Length: 394
Image (tube, rainbow, N blue to C red; front, side, top):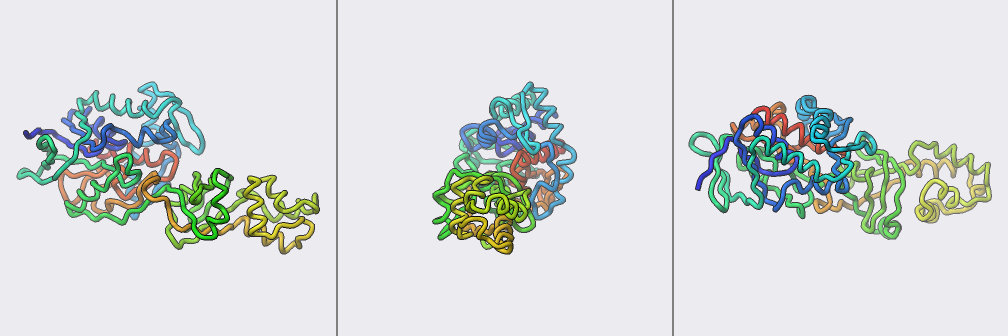
């Protein structure tokens, strides 16, 4: 059996559902194919189940790509305020947590329901548990997809299948395979927004601090992020580490300011005047977790009373606290990564419509493209914006 549609969208995640709803309401006959058993799995798990659905400060500077200009057009034409207006139209209550991050007051299920309602309003057909065996071009220049229960055809094919992150949610490299099949270049991929792992003496010294958290500013390759760091049994995590992980690769210099926003030297000299008999670990424990302060003092600074440190020694300690070097051995990989860096190269994709410049009727949206946002709602905003740009051209 062969079924005909105007548009087939592969992937029922944020970008795929958004694109389907808009295109359907423009009068197009739309079919969405999803290999998982339900739609929007990553939406449902995001933000601790409350979905950090956008960031009010989202702009091109919050994204990594081989072509940093590619995302500008779509982001400018569909802004966070535009998505918030959609959320409000559906009566979904939300709040700003920090740094422009917007979350549902209730559940991320509300965002999925909103997208499904938008699809329903456009008469979109959504089919889950659909494996695509093959994609071929038809004689008239369209696309034919072979499924277990027959074939579907459409003049337009939208790849919204995401990246490799969190394979337990159904992630796969399918979109990259389709891109290569049709002659598109796929840039090397790696895990982004992911915990870093430690090994050797670093893990020996810090592994038992799992659960300890403190504010830091992480620096790597010219990028810096101030937020919390969390020690884990295998390494380090927390928002600041997840953010910097997208800029870090094995062998890169990773430095952490353990006293962000503080003049460490002036503070230590002042503490020495005020309480010279207090040990360094005691003083550090006033402004950082006690267990970590003790570990630092014993292994890094030869703990003793402050009055026994010369000015030069305190300046050295202050410098090391502000530029603490930590050698990460790797990442936790795609298993826990929130996003995939790299992907379909943007130089052969239109920045205004997401259309392939090589194959008429083929489009790429969302995470499958080489556009990766920071932590905090930015990747969802790219999903919404790229989907809107595509849907407006279908």
